[in-house]
Length: 559
Image 1 (cartoon, rainbow, N blue to C red):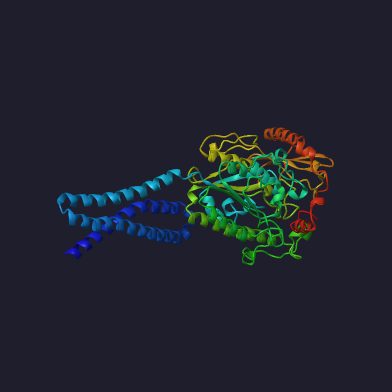
Image 2 (cartoon, rainbow, N blue to C red):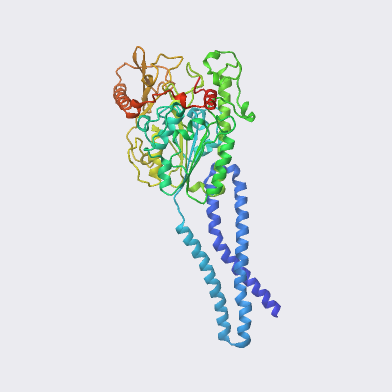
């Protein structure tokens, strides 16, 4: 009889412990499963993630069950007999049962309250990740209409994000473009008028998004893939950690290494609120995708004009542009594969539903579109300045395609708007969040300018005086070029002529008159800015080591 009572008591304790543990853990399990299922673009990984989550739930559930069952059993079957031996009365028996129940109830309430307190005290602000792929043309992604499947991971990400189909860079070179992204200012305003190796760097008086987020309590880190974002650009302002060591040839760091380092950093810091900037350099020339991606896309070796291909890009005597385009696309697919690792790590830690992820590029790349092949920096046609932009934040932004023109200087104001951080001091960009939420916005004018290198194929004036300037809306575009014979203009109807081949300048179209007026105002602001007037007077090569010169020569920045 005593054995039967003990077995019944143990069974009762286990049932009670099982019930309490189920209540404690079920909500957490459902929350994790909801996070995974909300990210449908990871369907092919979902089974493994659910299996891992279920195993973790089972182990935690078992531990809670054992502890609660034992604590229930302890007073009921050890304290109770001692009381009954001395005071074996109905009142005492009732008291012992109530005491057992009260002890376990207090324990259960304490554990539950601890969870509630932890939940309330938790910082529910989202993490922020900025991913930028250097030299990435928007129209070489499948999600932007490309015929090749270069970007399956990015395309899945796009389907769960706001995808901006007409995002414009302000400068087709890395250092000034990222300076504009991080400060939300035009180049003439932040002073980085060309790449860092020419002596240009961000003045510390300009506040970057990393400084704003650091001051708001975020842990900040940047993983840099190329020379033109090294610490001498001063774009490290506000980052707790700025990993710009390139190793190896000193030119760049491959996407695999960068992603492994950034994923390890997320692993170490996922319990803190963080801002992570990940800069992948892979599509930048020279196009050398790893062996697995060399022959991903078809190409021929037909002979064409080798002189049109910059020396730093050449693979022997191969002159067929299809070869180089296939290599460029292979670099994109390689970078895309490793970006999937970042998304997977965020899923593993349940961070996808509370992380703002911004994906973009600094500028595009000339393919065989015009006279100068496989390069960037000197011209302002869309292949060099139209870039991808996607913003993922499921808490506030349902997936959609946004067709209106936006600018890279609008990225940070939009982010700060999403974070409810009031920082509008002296910014040229503005938030597009009202437009994403259904409110009407005025059409944005996107201004941009070229580098100041005189090119082999044009007749521009050398130096800053020969910079191209341009302005663009979704439907119209005007480019201003200073030549030895005066100022030339090109005006394009982008609806009818998206390839920008037919110059219709001088036909008196109202949009042309309006855009020319606005462009001249912008040029005046630029050329009268302190940074423009100051320029970089000394020979920038004086500050470069022989090693720096070799690196910059290898990627085509100097000759």
